[in-house]
Image (cartoon, rainbow over all chains, first blue to last red; front, side):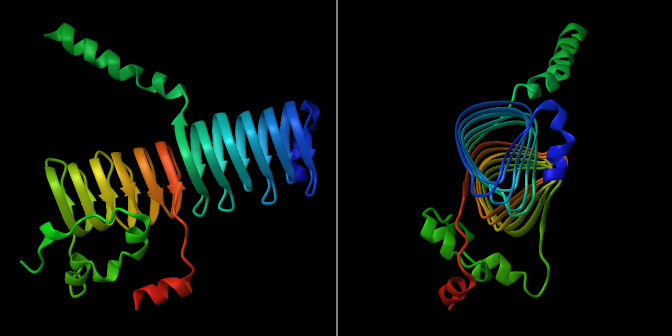
Length: 133
Length: 147
């Protein structure tokens, strides 16, 4: 995990090690890697939660890889990956999702608005049929 | 008729769901000697209550689907309620689903409420709705319940 974090170090990263608890509002330009415990509001480009990691609160990230536990409200604007050891509970919003067998999801799951643009071509087809008649 | 399928009702409570014995499920019993299965082809729509052992759905099922193994193929649609042991979704499901394992693959889309033991999502699979992870019984307890 530290290797992954090291890749993003130039963007300003946060690492919460095993046994460490951090509470508060945090804005991370790069990757936030949690092997310990975080409670509060977290904004980051990437969230990586290790098997021992526990994150709760309002979380908003571009991408997330969850191997531990995430609770409350998680918004992932791009890709959410839930590993087999991972657990999500609460309200989850995502654009793309991948869940490994064994990963646990409990709560409300929503797709972010990006999917609305996917439906756009369908609406155009309807208009085409109407004009053809 | 080997069984009064109309009398089969979906387990409702968590206890009923957990204690449901798929080995005693009449279609499963009937399928022991031959691997029976139901294919709902792309030109077919079914409504009401469908009870079967294994089904592959290319068409549409509206209502109650009660089967041990359900595969909603690409282009297939299921609406209503589903009670099954394994469910694979490559098509579209708008339903309240109770299952042991859920696998959303390819372009599969699932919306509704899901009570599952294990879930796997891959490819371009999409899920929305409420998810509840049913507790996994220890093997010993399951074995005792089956006696």
